[in-house]
Image (cartoon, rainbow, N blue to C red; front, side, top):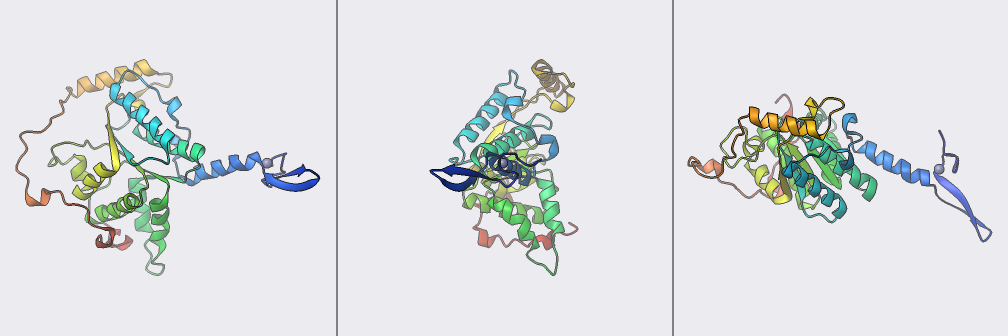
Length: 288
Ligand SMILES: [Zn+2]
């Protein structure tokens, strides 16, 4: 329904000292924020996420992660690092990431963008078109230029050279231009970098070392929200968390020793400058 104050034009007539002029109607600000939210591509199931509705329970690392997310929102855009939320599925990592994204869009007027990493790679692949060679840049440009980007579920895609190059291109471009990114991932940042399910192996050494340079790591465990009954609350989540830990036999986090000698391919290299990335383009991703 059209706004009664401006009849839907977004401009409101005002008269001052006998001079008539127009100014932006308050409905326009509202619409602009709504549009910016729509443009951010947040999936409908996360469309209402905010930190106030996030169920907290006595879980120190979770509480610290949420507190850090709040500080990020307050400081934005004066933030030097992004965030990397790490932990098992279902513990609210995407909820926290989207809450931050929505808050900086609504409160700070930022251009925000959300992508599930697998969706993003699928879209880049599908844009390859031998006639319109620029199509993939139409997808990549907003990803590289968003004031805040959320990349959800990092490491879930099957690792390949093309995946690694494409992700490095995106992440390095944002890093070089000092644009923060928030990542979520189910893969533990294990000190044992030979483990197949470690973050490092899933995303590659270059990306892994870049992540550490550009993000604060917020690793936590918690109750699985997907197991929470409809009327469940903090107590239920705490119970789910403790039960889950018990079931997993409380795996002690191994630090340090007993690591096998690493071959030369495991020596961490500095990420090369962008021009040396030689990103093969969307083509190479076809049918991979
Ligand atoms: Zn209006």
